[in-house]
Length: 98
Image (tube, rainbow, N blue to C red; front, top):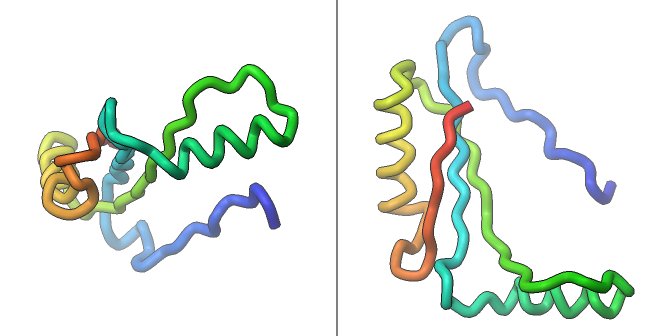
């Protein structure tokens, strides 16, 4: 089904454990080539979508953390991003708590 959202995955009933959700957005840094974005931009043009400028692709990682303190949860997600989720040489990341 095109455009259908992914089903929610639950590992533990929410009544048993308080959690915070963190969303880590990872994007290529400015000046880093993005061949996937380039290909998508080209394909959009061939499909008749005019007026599309530069296209950049990235990824979003949603984390459910058992940490209940927002500052500690943000720090934990940022550490995860620096150590694993983003290649900080060529990618930047942003952490949002939900």
